Image 1 (cartoon, one colour):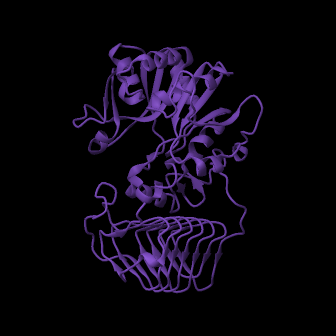
Image 2 (image 1 turned 30 degrees about the vertical axis):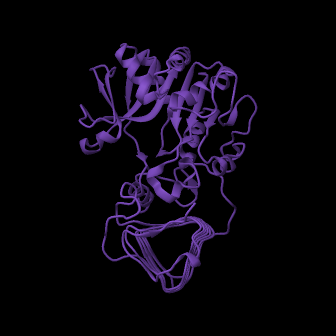
Image 3 (image 1 turned 135 degrees about the vertical axis):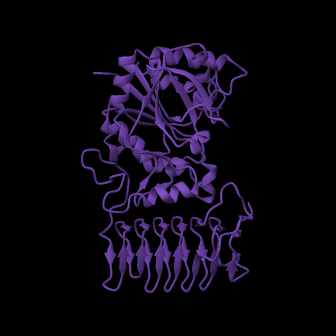
Length: 421
């Protein structure tokens, strides 16, 4: 049996998700009713029979660490392996914070050495997908590769957001472009690598000694290996994979799970997605409620109308309210006779009765045009929206906003309320 160690890079901030990731690391962001993003990568490891899993953390790790615990929901609380949280630390040879993705792995090579594996999987903790890593590793062995990169064909219009691979007829990578302005192809890296351990040790040590390097796989390790004609191969993955890096992709990917034949089946017993979640009673839907094409999680109470919406655990939607095309995270309360459309409501936020959110016409953001650039309005964690407030489209209400922070009865489209640090 192959000896494989998996390292999940879970220290990213995810700045394009705005207030959603101001308080937590991107891999800890709630997704699909009761999961967090990292659940998919960890579950892929377990379903692939990989039980030596290190999770590399850095930015705002506390909620992520609390969620993962000792890995019990994934049966990773075991001897001879298990789930390990790998936080930055100060050693004799290294500085504390990770400089890049390659440095994050380099600083944790002692963890890998402990198991002396045949192969090392380097994975991202903030993508939504299902993949049998055994197929990737078998392909790696078949090709006699030093490194194999999982890739996917993407539309040309999106190619500039990814690392792009150019391959020969045998799938060996002969050119690599990191987020190119003019892509030479559409085969995009998914940030999923398998390395032969001896090769990985050598290239990471060499990279660490290069003071000009940014110590990053995409910017340094992969381009250098391609330029040397080393044995790098592309594995063309044809399954479901999503990069949930923007507010639009976050909302759209959540809503993809709805409907009779979703592209991501969360109820597939042959490939379960495991998570750490509270034991709650079944959802309650009142006789006067109306639920259309929506996901209602345990402990939620619905008294109003819900359409094309993901409702997380413990959410309460009171009488007379209408919620459409939205995501309501754990513990939200939507007051009576309130309207929400195209809204992401973060955990434990409270929306006052008689409010209207996500209404009106789109306007450019006065807060941050790179982050807030769609019809989506975001209500931050633990925020309280007063009764009778109107909030337009493309608005943002910061985390921990209180009723006292509202000096107006209407927040115009493109505007918001941001707390001063």
